[in-house]
Length: 196
Image (cartoon, rainbow, N blue to C red; front, side):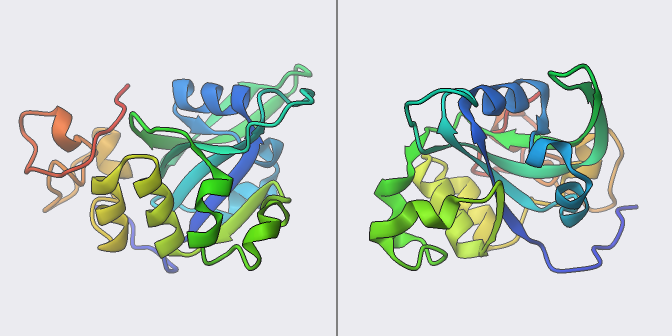
């Protein structure tokens, strides 16, 4: 049986570089705050996460400044090697896609957490940021995922993480198990999922 959530679902922006986003999506986990325990402890399975890339790589001078991936935190933990050879704890994630990257400046005026659209970069200065449900849904829509935005607004299908790991949750629909429309057993859930 699925564990009961101890708090309301939260939605996050993780801020990094495009190469980190690509690694996170390809390996089904989230790279956030270089694996600091404070960042990991703040998130629970079922929380929403979108990844914002400031630059193509950590040390690049050019800017890309776009949302590149969006999904849901999964139930497990993965241990990976850091670039310095150390071991880093990562949270599993289920990435929705294919998502169309979207430049943050194009969205700034529509996002509630951006208090001054002309100074939108200041709103994305930290390595992670909690945002509201509606802002998260607007980002999903801008990434050409209107069905996932609907799921976010209606709080449906986001607790699929445990079932997606192969455990049955009583009463969970195929959509709740993360199968989306790519599976013939789907109940017609409108969003597309990346599957491993």
